[in-house]
Image (cartoon, rainbow, N blue to C red; front, side, top):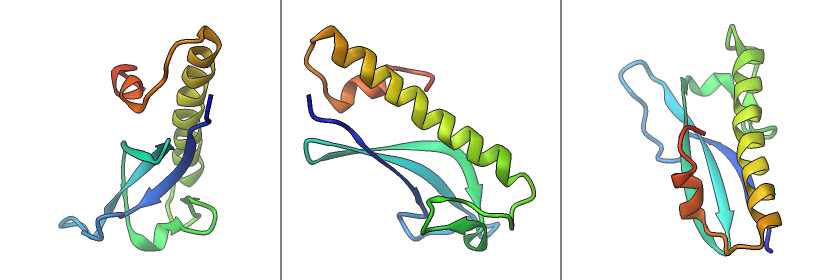
Length: 101
């Protein structure tokens, strides 16, 4: 089975809200198809480290946010692993159905 590729993205639509913040999303790529999952976090541009794809120290609770983001990714990776071991066909729609990720 082909593996999902994961990457956190900040402000992929290049639009800021009224607080000059934009969302952090997790991009999943599988067989050339993409799925974007919201993390629920909105931050300012100077609070994002694009090289490391994580929140930087300009955000007061950056460690907690980064921990949440990595836990989100790990939960999806675990779902992917469990599903691949079942031998069933996999697609990104299954991630959407996974529910409260």
